[in-house]
Image (cartoon, rainbow, N blue to C red; front, side, top):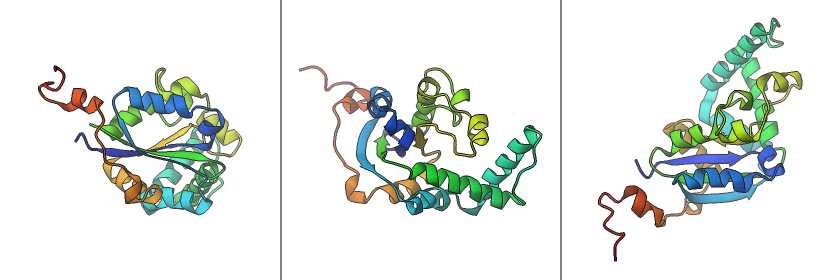
Length: 200
């Protein structure tokens, strides 16, 4: 469990707002270990693969259904005939956003890393994210504003949602040799059962 890995991507808006250090600090200070890091400009193809290969057709349908429901809640009709069409429109918008500039891709490791990173990151829509989370503290976008502008919500970060997602996503963004294996001194405090390595 202490070796669980998760992918985190600081999206183009996070990079452009000079929040890289602040975001890394939030994960680092809780005790997670950074074992992979790179800055790249993803192609739209890579960004599309990121969303589609992980979720597949089921993800497309579910995202499309949620988007259609969001239109209905506003008293509007979805401009797409099917959930699938709506889902693909969302995917394309997300891929365009993710590939619009440099991103910082990271691999974090630690006990419950996936759930912990999601908790620290905050809810997908920053306006609904709790104070104290990265999204709640550092940005103000909302689904309503994004819909008005017909774009993806700008929420600074992508973080894997499950172990299965993390395994698939890590392969898209990192080669095996880019993920480091090393001992971090804080692991002795976090995981050493008896703390018998402290005294001289």
